[in-house]
Amino acid sequence: MNLPHDLVALREEYFTHGLRRIDLDPDPIKEFGIWFTAAVEVGINEMNAIALATVAENGQPTTRMVLLKGYDHAGFVFYTNYQSEKGRHLEKNPRVGLVIHWKELERQIRIDGIAEKVSREESTRYFHSRPIGSQL
Image (cartoon, helix red, strand yellow):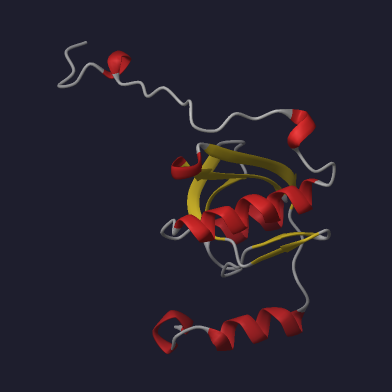
C-alpha cells in the first residue's frame, strides 16, 4: 500500500502524566469529576465532546460525536432526537459505548453501559434551552 504518510512512524510518546491505581479515587464518578475539572482548567475546546457508539439492527456498530450534558452516579447524560439514526438504534438496542479523549491531559475514558431515556420533563427542558435553529 502506497500511503502519502508513514502512518506507522506517526507516534507520540506520552510521558507527562502517569496513571497509578493508588492515585485514583475509588469512586469512578468522583475521579471523572477530577479529570473533567482538569480539562476545564487547561481550556480544552469542547471538553464535553464524546464519541458515542450505538449498534444498528444488523449488528453494525456506529460511532459519532455528541456532547456530554451531565453526569452523576446515575449515569452520563447526552441528548438526541428520538427519530435520528442514533435514537432509532437506542430504541432497538440500548447498549452503548462512550469514549472521551483529552489529548492535552494524555487521558481517555471509556464507558460501556445501557442507555436510558431521561424524564420527559428533563428532555423538554433541555429541548427548550437549545437555540431555535437547533430545535427544528
